[in-house]
Image (cartoon, rainbow, N blue to C red; front, side, top):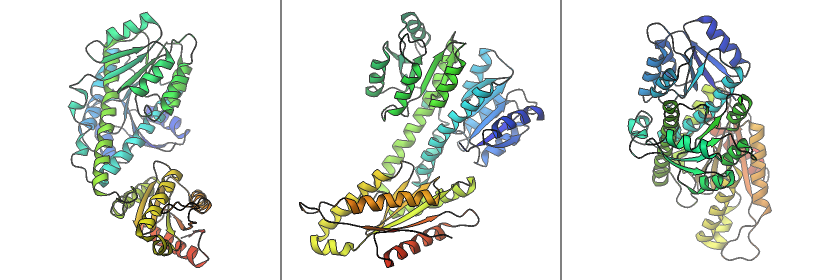
Length: 457
């Protein structure tokens, strides 16, 4: 998992210790030795997680975190407070100023790495939503995370899954007045309730007598309806291995018994704030794209969206030195379909082609109707060789299964030609990437159609 981690501490030895641990996991590490430098590094927009020491001269970590979370440009960056302070009041203070987590020195290696990986996953999701919101020029999106009303007003609806009556009663009492808590005593009924209810956080107790709590967390992560729900795991002091495995599976946070009311509420508030922020991003992006940048016939993004979003994807890939590939597809002899079945028949083919394309690519890929019977698919984090494999899969699927057009029983045979290009790190451009794919498509057409051709730089 590649990400940029900013380590902030006024003691060089502490910085070096964390740097060595993170480099061993192939993270890219940035360093800062005071608060102003840390804020400046975050403002550059290339930081994925901040590990922030609290006890620094001048501007302490609490103030640094407060300023980062108050600035719309940096409010979405996860911050982990790292300190020798071990009082609940200190942890709560950190969470209240916006910190996403709190680690106590000396830092446990496994907890450090799994914590960072968990927050990087959340950051990747938020980055994608922010990027798409920015592309569609949604008004006010940058201010969302800094808004205080994201955690005020209506109480968050929380599902507690705990089979122990006394434990469940204690947790409900701690959250009284801070959340609308509903209880599920059985893990399977809890999974069903989570999928059917409009919850903002799931709290899972580790104390099941005959069921693995991590299996429940895994099931919650595998369902579409609960995949993005925050999960908080409640564990005992001796369950370090369970905690680490839970973070690797994708839980968002954990608490160790005995529970403190203030810390429980503060951590719940952090999860609810992030969920509401991402929910509003999704809603705004969905509405704006649907109105402005969606192709009305196929439901894919249109060329307008591609022209706006592709430069951002290329810029991000180049800045992070991550691969990116692109393919242009063109339906072979499409004019014959229009001449034989009319434009209504041609539209049926285009809609079905778009449906098959969407089934063949990932959620992070960008599929667009470029114009007429041409489509463009952008694949972030994908090497050229893998993009060729995906392109061949699409070509094969189109050729193998006839298209139902105008009520035809046998269906109509349709083929597609595909040109593939990959981003070159040194000095490549959007125009160059598109031109190479277009030339590759031309080669596929001239060499007999119904084939995939990749074009090198």
